[in-house]
Each structure stands twice: as C-alpha cells, then as structure tokens.
Image (tube, rainbow, N blue to C red):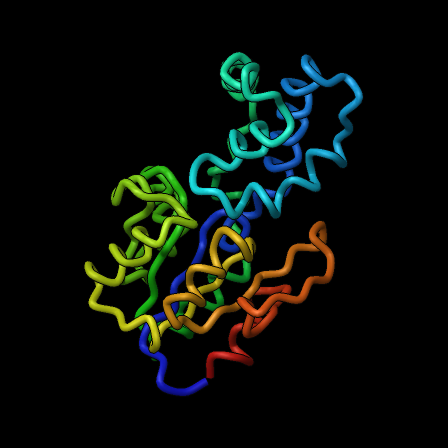
Length: 221
C-alpha cells in the first residue's frame, strides 16, 4: 500500500473486544422491545445491526426505534436506559486485543496513527493504562468533537484537526455501515476488521479484510 500517511483506528470492536458487551446490550434491547412486541427474538434484534448502523445517533436507540412503534418509542427508550445501567463495563485493559501492543509500535515507525471512534473521552485513560496511547498522534474521540459516526462531520473534523489527507489515509473498522461507508466516501482506503458473528459480506466500501490486527502488517507495509 503506497502513498499512505495516516492510519485511523476504530476503538470498540477493533482495539477493544466488545462482543460480549454487544450481545448483552442486544438482550436488553430485546427485553425493552418485547414489552410492545412479545414475539420478537434475539435474532430479530441482531438482524437490525446493519440497518441501524447506517443511522446517525446512538446505535442501541436506533435498533430499538426500528422495532418499537413510534408512539411507544419514548417509553421504550426510557426502559432501555434503566436496563443499560446494569451493563458490564467493557472499557477495561483486559479487553484490549493483545496483538495491538505488537502492531502499533511497528506501524508508528512509518505512519501517523489516529482514532476515529464513537467513544467517551475516558477511553484514553484505558489506552494509557494499557501502554498504547503513546503511539497515537491523534486520540480525540466523538465526544471531543460532538459528532458520531456515521456523521461525515466527525471525519471532516478529524481531517481538519490533524491535517490528514483522506486520500492518503486508512480507516480500520469492524462496522461497515457505521465506519467504512463514510470513510470510503471521503476517499480513504478502508480495512474491515471482520468479527466472526457478522459472517461473510461483500461491500464496495471495503478495500481489505482482516480477522486479526497482525494482518495489518501484511497490508500496510
């Protein structure tokens, strides 16, 4: 891969393994939605992931809005917010993919590294505790900018603050609709971190596919 200056990473799903958290959250979405539609199943909620990811806003609320009648959504949302207070914390060092500690030092010798992620600012503390924050030339997240993927304003804000040329930048994300579609629209090179639960997919928004962060070393040489 030639003519690349910047490599941007998503956090949840790519740097941090959040699969258990996502399944726990989907279960809570199901429970809130079943109040209004008892026949819904966990698979019904899981199948909403792709469509809900294309909508700007909170992913869980987007999913809920797609299966709860409009006039009931406000109450369902409040019910979900109460349930989410019991979610396990996945923002922990133990959930960071161990191979990232091998990959970042190598990549940082040749490229500038950054983050484009829908996260709270305290994720930086976790990355620092893991000893990897130092490798990122850009570590601002969605909360810092006031925009969330897939809003193109987040990408533009990152380009403005870093001076990165999107056509000379790479985006790595586990969510095609939420992270890679807009990246491709800006002209970025896109790498899909394929999680087992999402199976095989084909998308014009994906240039490369990896299943382990070490695979990056074979792509971004």
